[in-house]
Length: 190
Image 1: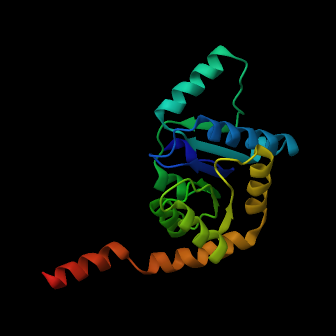
Image 2: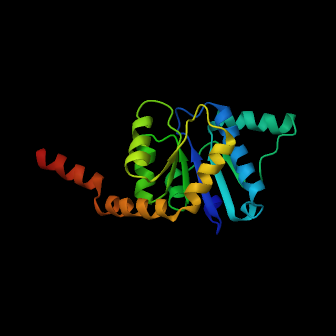
C-alpha cells in the first residue's frame, strides 16, 4: 500500500464500515485538517491524512469537487476502503468511531486515538480508552465543530504522553497472542 510510504506524520480516519454514511462528519474532518494546515503552513508538508469514507461518500465527494469549487487539501487522500492494519502499523493518530475491533487494533499497533463514538459498543470503548486509560481524546461525532477537532488533533499529536501510554499497552497486547491462546483453550477442551 504505497500511500503510507512517507516520512510525514500519518493521520488515519475511519468510522468503520457500518456507521460511515454521514458525509458531514467527513466534511468536518477535512475542514479540521484545512484549519490545521492554515494554522501552520508546514503541516501541509509534515502531515499526510488518509480518510476511509466508504464508496457512497467517495461518490458524493467526487460530485462535490466536480460540480463546485470544493477543494480537498493536498495532504488529504480520500479512500473508499483502506487496509486498516497496514495503515495503523505506520500511523501517528487514529481518528476512529471506537468500535471494539478498531480500538483493539489501535492498542495493538500503538496508535493514539481521537475517538468519535456513534452507537453500540463505541461509547463504552471510547470511555475506556480515553477516560480510564488516557490513550487519546474523544469528541462528539454528531456535534463537533472543525475548530474543536483541529484542537484535539493538535493536542494528541503534540503530547508525547499519549504515545508513551499506548505503547505500554501495545507491548502487553503483543506479548499475549489472543488468537493463539484462544485456539489452545478450544483445542484443550475438544
